[in-house]
Amino acid sequence: MIKSILATIALLCWASAATAQSGDNEQDSRWSIAIHGGAGTLDRDRITPEQDKDIRAALNQALAAGSQILEDGGSAIDAITATIMILEDNPNFNAGKGAVFTWDRTNELDTSIMDGSDLSAGAAAGINGTKNPILLARAVKDHSPHVMLSGEGANQFSRDQGLQQVPPEYYATPYRLEQIDKLLSKEVSAADIDYKFGTVGAVAMDQNGHMAAGTSTGGMTGKRWGRIGDSPIIGAGTYADDRSCAISATGSGEYFIRLGVAHEICARIRMRWPIALEEAQRTVPKDAEGNYTYIIHASEFMLSDEEIQQIADDVIAELGELGGDGGIIYATPWGQAGYSFNTAGMYRGRATSEGEQSVAIYGDEE
Ligand code: ASP
Image (cartoon, rainbow, N blue to C red; front, top):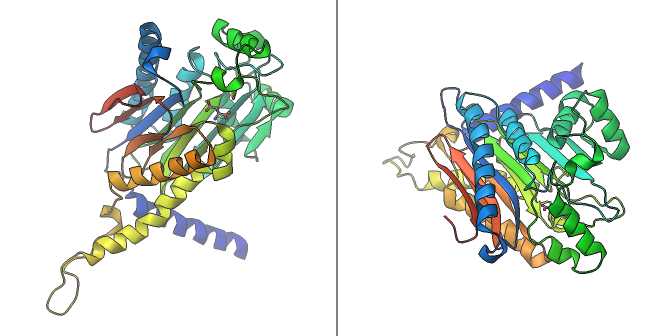
């Protein structure tokens, strides 16, 4: 009994801190969303005009679907789920249909999702059979007592949940088959194969100030021994917390796991906020008695766009120093939505209630 009262008090304190920090306001109709479709050596000479057009159309379609849900007052978690499903269904991306092949010429999909309003999360690793893996992550979050399921057990759970199943050949595309065949015949190395990764992800803030993040991937071409990347790992490839940010990552997963990239960025934002608030308060003029002429309220204080970008860039720089490639998308409780990556390009897009909607591929865009 006492335990549960304490737990309730702790939850209320956490919720009010999250509210203060996120400026949660039922009247506030702002929302934002960012998406990615993978990062890598996305040079202009590696992508045909046709591919360029198809990718941008797919990103715009996914972005529009998520934006509409947020504009209509839907939740961040619903918006990112719908967005990621569209990208999973598109064969241009390494998730759902179009997933890369393992060394054994099979598909083993990884995915995760997180709701920043209560820190609930779900993930599935090394799965197949589910048409839309992000729905399996969502089902693990919503309908199981666990956070992460793997392999056959996860596939079984998916069937038990009544999620749409597909035969193994559903995921295959001629392009991905060619990639694995080239790799297996040693014509190219795994590094060459994955010059553009193709994982998909979305992050969002809804009109109630709630955050969510999700990621879905086939992993790395030619992966062996049940290798699991960062995408299904909460804190590495995906993280969301109403007090700080929502992150989805893409790139060389081993490095993202080692740095705990998604959580690291959110933690730095969460730690920076009260310090920045205090710094801002100190700049307020004082009256004759030495009291501040006004108090900056938590609900009206936000980290600047530059500060958020710097934090994300710092963590990606550390990733690079370690030897990792890739990038992240972010959304914050103050409405910012953006990216940071150390590769030549990243399939990406963002939209906000302020009317912004853009998609981009190459590093020199925007
Ligand atoms: N991060 C994914 C993994 O390592 C791959 C990717 O993002 O393309 O499995």
